[in-house]
Amino acid sequence: MSKTILLIEDDSSIRRFIAASLSGHGFKALEAVTGKTGLEYLRSHHPAVVLLDLGLPDTDGIEVVKRIREWSKVPVIIISARGQEGDKVAGLDAGADDYLTKPFGSSELLARIRASLRRLGTKDKDSPIFKTGSLEVDLSKRHVRLGGHEIHLSPIQYRILAILVLHAGRVVTREQILEEAWGPDKDAGLDSVRIYMHQLRGKIEKNPLRPQYLKTELGVGYRMITDEDRI
Image: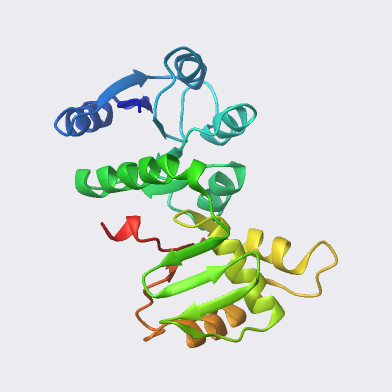
């Protein structure tokens, strides 16, 4: 697998910081200052992961994500000073895999990159049975077990869990859960997502206040924690 990380960022000091962090851990940083150049590098160099700033001089980073997703499944991690909920949701809905708000440490950035690479490496091993910790979800039979014991979920609770399983390790926005779990004729709102997530945690988590499986991404949505995320 490629060890090249494409960094699309116009701030030179941040580029130097990230490039040094990557170099010290066996990665090579391919640097682009504009969205146009970043897209050209993506086509010509086939990097393993893209780190993308939203505030680019020639275009908005959200548009770059959309362009990437027209033809590539490369993991995209947004790195941005925009910490507002709307910016995070827009980036993830456009197709980004993760979102880091500046400032961030090199350890967190490298952990997110490693997690993206692990998920990428296991995509060809997809199975109808998902396991993480003591939780097991059989998507073909719609069975959920915790520590070997079957857990009974309502239809909506199961659909939400299945959505998170299918996107395991990635942030899923509340809006996406609402659309996929309730459908286009939904008679529900974002509060319904919060209520059902609370119920779901009550059935799955040993301590719902300190979840091991269903993590809240503040102001954005939720993430199913995988065994790879715990490494």
